[in-house]
Length: 548
Ligand code: SIN
Image (cartoon, rainbow, N blue to C red):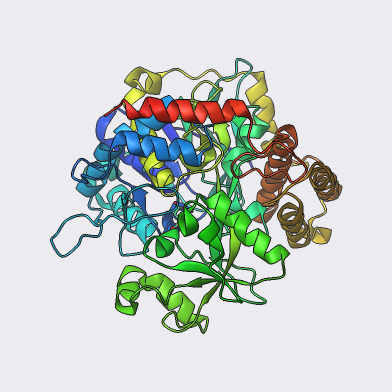
């Protein structure tokens, strides 16, 4: 059957907060003669940002204890000086507009009884500045309103075509390094389509599923990153994976429900089975940066201890009101937070690295943009300051639309031999394949275990080398059944293929950085942080004091 072809003005891959917000802004403000195509491999509302509990950073003038300079300083300190100062400043300065714009779209941030916005605290923030929705359902609360706009607003929705259950399998990049569109795979009908567009935006989220234990939903398989790696886009900072310190850890259950850091922000503390509050010896105690807390818990485990959150320190009525989903999930697992400690352990949560971009999502490939977790704007450096990422999604998506010119959306399309060859891989009916024998889940579980055990919170040269060889063996096994490593027969095979690309990428970056910094901890390194980075952090933190 010949492959279907179509053309849009813009393709947006991914329907998390970054993708939805970009689609809305483009539809509202730009001329899109061929329309906007929004594709998601799942359903419109299913994405990683939907699960963000704690919140979104709001550096707002009405919050008198806060300032842009304080937020910049906190971000750069948490990021161990590896953040890009200008990006941090830009995102911080645009926080007020981003929050007010979300409110305009109907997002209802929680307020106190004086009808003022209610700010909470998370690790490494020096003041309360985090806004939340529905107590502990911030991602869901934002996502719901944006989905509503995309689907039901008569003006916005008229320009947007939605493809659900559709995976992007390759970028169409020509010999001049310009992206001309994508190939898609319908995960239900298994049909392929070639879609051309003068602008392609990747907003596919993170990579959490590369690890055995993750707070991320099952859709988070690094698909956009794998597309970019296959297309030779520049990638940055992939050694920096954030492990959230407090995921609910139930025996014989590998899933890891997030216990928001704002639970500690509201007074809960980490404790071991001996009743020791072991974070007391750290300067920022239980609200130290995430990498610090995750390693402290790891050290407890290494001593054979178990780790819990003591949430009894929070008034139970307040807890139920502030954290209704956490309260319910704990109860569903037999934990009554009024009386019981919550068993927790770290889990992969966020990828600080990604496709190297400018703050507006511009990548090293012309006409290709990346926004949200798939991108690396260098806001986060070596360790993301909590709740900065939802803010980054909105500000980057806004800036993408703000800097795109209408003429870019009208550019004529040139299809060269390189693109034709990419398309041919998917239109060829010849497909050497032995899917009957291919146990995808088995290889997937192996990959996730290798990454958790050898490329996790603590790494060494030898654990990384061993991990690389294990992942290469998994790739070889994959190729026994599917030689091409491009066209696959179903969604899970594509996802496994993508996770193989992502795993190798994380390992290679982790091997290249010999010293420990932020979330990348090399147990075999004497150097905890290079002097250069320390000086940079100091210098930039001082710089930030003169702003605002
Ligand atoms: C949390 O609520 O602890 C997660 C928020 C974030 O990752 O920014």
